[in-house]
Amino acid sequence: MTASRLAPRTFIAVAIFLAGTLSGILVAAALLPHVFTAPRQPPGLPSLGRAPNGWTLTNQLGEKVSARNLHGRVWVVTFLDPFCRQDCPIIAHHFVEYGHALRLAGLAPRVVLVSFDLDPQESSPAILRAFQRNYGWNPKNTHWEFLTGTLAALRRVVTGGFHVNWYLVPKGSPEDRPPPGGTPPLYSANPLAPRARLDVMHPALLEVVGPHGTVRRIFNSGDLVSTFRLLRVVSRLLPPTVIRAR
Image (cartoon, rainbow, N blue to C red; front, side, top):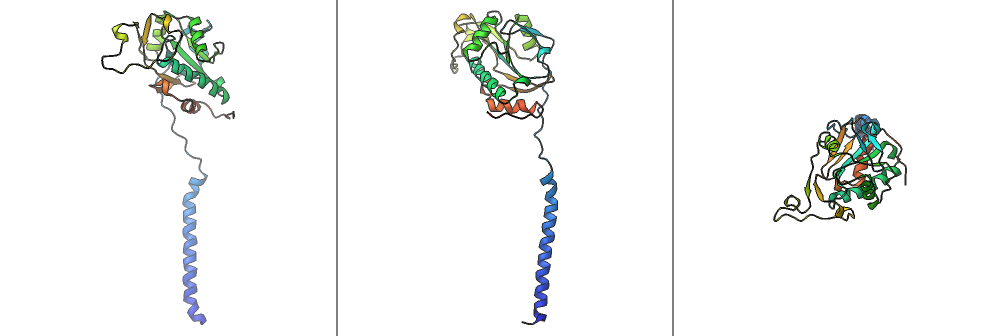
C-alpha cells in the first residue's frame, strides 16, 4: 500500500484520538470540583423551642439539681411514672443501654440522661433509686438524673416548660380502663407498681436538648428509639470527637 493511501487514514485516526483525549480532559475538569470538595454534611437539627430553665429539683440521691447544672451538655429527656407497668419500664431499659453506649463512645461527660417524675405525690428519692435498680442502673451514677419535687414544681417544668401534659387517675377507675372494644394495654414488669394508688396518663415522649438549652428533637414514641438512633442524634449536637472502639 502506498504512502498516499495511508495519509487520509492516519489523519482520521489522529483526529479521533485527539477528540477522545479532549473529551476526557473536559469530563475530568467537570468532575474535579466534586472529587476534591468535601461531602456535604446533613442539615442541622431544627430548633423546637427553649427547654425550661430556672428550676431546681431533687434527684434520686436526694441532691438538689438545677437546670444550670446541666448547661453545656446534651440532655436526653423523658417523663416517667416510677410505678408504671407499660412504657416507662421499656424506656428505663433503653436509658440503661444509652448510658452504656455513651460511655463506650466517650460521649458520657457531654451528655446527661434526665427523667422527670410524674407521680411525685406517691414517690420519693428512695422510690426513684429502686426504680433505677430494677432495670440495671446504679443510682449513685448521676449520668442518669431521675428528678422529683412537689407536684406544682414538676407541673411548671414538665407542662409549663416542655409542654407535656399528664394527669393522675385512681387505679381501676373508668378513666384507667381501655375504651370498650379497645386493644388491652401491654404490661411490663415493675415490682413497684402495687405500691401506687394512682395511675399516670402521659405520652411516652423522649426529647433531646442541645448544649445551649434548645429542644432539637422530639420522639413521640420514646419506647421505640434504638440506641443507634439516639447516638446519631446526640452526635450531631456535639463538636467532632474521636469515637472510642469497644
